Length: 396
Image (tube, rainbow, N blue to C red; front, side):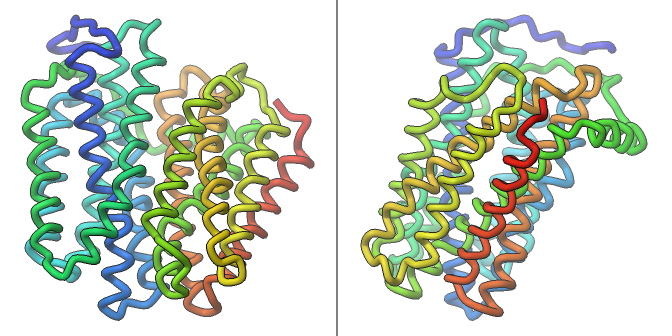
């Protein structure tokens, strides 16, 4: 492997340069957080069916899923800084397309968002990996994770406020600012410019690596659980605002704020509870899945619960916060070291696949039945995953 423009700087996790990167990440995900709420509301307002809304919202993570295994290869080949430059230009262009063309451009915008998200997350993680010392890397990754989650605290509130405005000027101004600011922040970021020109893999290598993991029962159970959890997240993210709006079930922004607050708080307070020993912990996974089951069941009976529906945000928030880092930590230990550069992207893609399925499939369920049945469906799927975890609890 030959490197060009070797990167030799080392920063502390809380240095000015790293804080600039965290702020860049927060601004990037703010746009995604806002549009994830705006798109379904605007689509329904324009007469688009629930099934089509599910398809539209699932497109982004589906595209991201397809591209993830290759994102790391592209970043390594062209350098973190060069890739970040082009993807932020693409991000700005995507937002401007929606500003200029509105709801008619939603399919194009969702596809472009998938492309940008796949490369942004990989670029940031590889950049942080190179910029920090080994002993500081965990703290840097935690700070990046926090910066990507923070927009879920204020993004939905801002989105609902902008959507309720009769004058679209505020919404347009917000998108323009979120398109320009990340580019301005990028200008002086000391991101790595090293190019690993020999980093490459073929489709046969990728398929061979995946086939090898199929012999590991723990990885199979972890992947199924990951897909189920992401499916529930995708369904709730896409259809909860429409559900609450249709049945007048309280304040959408307040519900999403509670849920996001629980996610952020849980990841911080319970961070040391996440198993990090390379062993499968079925009891912990069952508790997380049980929290999700309670949350979706409460949503299914939201009309009967009235204002008590806000309690479901707590259970859903705990499940959202704990499932992904727990499973990804386990996977990072047990996948073969020599295939890690391939397989981490594949397992990240399973999370994207689940999110897409949550939008695609549950959108069809809503259109054919009702929101209540859709949430009951989420509960049933999670129960099946929990039963599988219990039955296969003696794996490692």
